Image (cartoon, rainbow, N blue to C red):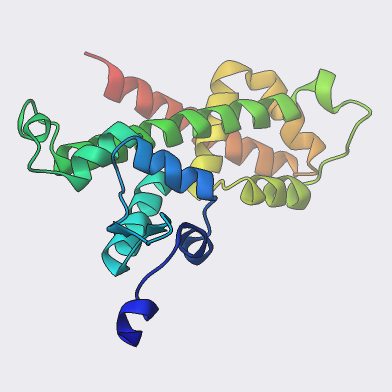
Amino acid sequence: MSHARRDTFTLGQLAKRVGLARSSILHYESVGLLAPYARSPAGYRLYGESELDRLLTIRRLRGSGLALADIRIILSPSDESALRGGTGPMALLEKRLLGLSQEVERIRTQQRLLAHLLAAPDIRNGRQHWDKASWVALLRRAGFDEEAMHLWHVEFEREDPDEHANFLALLGLTPAEVAEIRRWSKAAYGEQTLRSSP
């Protein structure tokens, strides 16, 4: 009997255990994702370990950005809707994963554009003096790796070669360093152009 009590949770206990608001759990119930296994004599919802596990799974799936409708399909793969048109659990997870890669690419593009704006003369004048170390540190804090920084230089060189050269000089690079960066930026742009040609 004590074992049953230890594995049984009220709504408030379940919410505390998983770190969710009671209203979130009630919402999951209202859309059919979760249900108490029983009610107490006083009418309180009672949940067991299986409901706890299911709720933790729901929370992980929500954390990955999946919609509640998709979570329902993933948690009930035998539903008729999950068996039609590639909407089963694997297809939904793959779709979300691929969608995230597109979101990441969109965000990376926005990051490069913002870095380009920070390097623009009308933005940088009178606001901050960059040197190479502080500029690289900023880009690294923003999540740029070597490849992303390389691509940023390539795009800057392609879009505004003179301003790219000016910005590199303002970073305190020597004329030889500026020339080298511009050389491989132009070469990389040429390679991209050749690869994208029909």
